[in-house]
Length: 252
Ligand SMILES: Nc1ncnc2c1ncn2[C@@H]1O[C@H](COP(=O)(O)OP(=O)(O)OP(=O)(O)O)[C@@H](O)[C@H]1O
Image 1 (cartoon, rainbow, N blue to C red):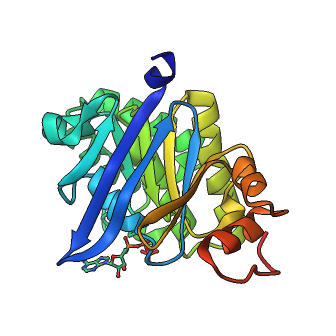
Image 2 (cartoon, rainbow, N blue to C red; image 1 turned 90 degrees about the vertical axis):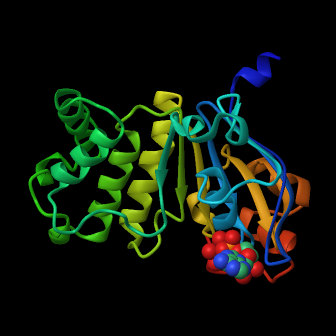
């Protein structure tokens, strides 16, 4: 039971089909408080489908998804209150300033302007983006736009943050900085993080890892544990073995 109290996101026995074609097949895993959990899989593995179920874009008909002990099916939209989301595609209004974008979101979450402004400054400062607050989002590069979206996901002080391929299209140094920042959020603020990716170098050895392929979970545990259980020498080799493709020499 004490183990359970750390469980912030619980996905149990979830299956999902598109027009009769199975995209998720009996998927289950847990994301715990203070842990960075990577959901790793090649294109088509089912990561975005799972993400859409967790964020309630789609209804979970088979199995259950619970956030902080409340299932999405029973608690409805309220179950999403402890959740922050960063979608794969940017969802900022390019013609509004950073502050206007974030204020708008904070108001949707029911925050007062005063609380919103305080939280906006706090989160942007943490991401070294505070000086861009009055610029239009259109003037920001991809890395800064992503930082603003991460700040936005944190404004209401969620317990769980889910990010879908959050570093797509960013250069390597920016990617590293954002991956490092999100790891730190888990470690220092006790956030539960679910990070979907197909990039092995974004995963640290002591992260929790769920490997998916063709709609199924093919391995889970710490990243180091997954490597050990496959009898390989690196996560790249472990991943290649698990999904049945040759290891890439260039991967970190
Ligand atoms: N709207 C849709 N209609 C029909 N099939 C879909 C739809 N979206 C995804 N699929 C199929 O479901 C499976 C899982 O796709 P999904 O997008 O969840 O994978 P993914 O791991 O997120 O991959 P990617 O990195 O390419 O987004 C794939 O076979 C895909 O072709």
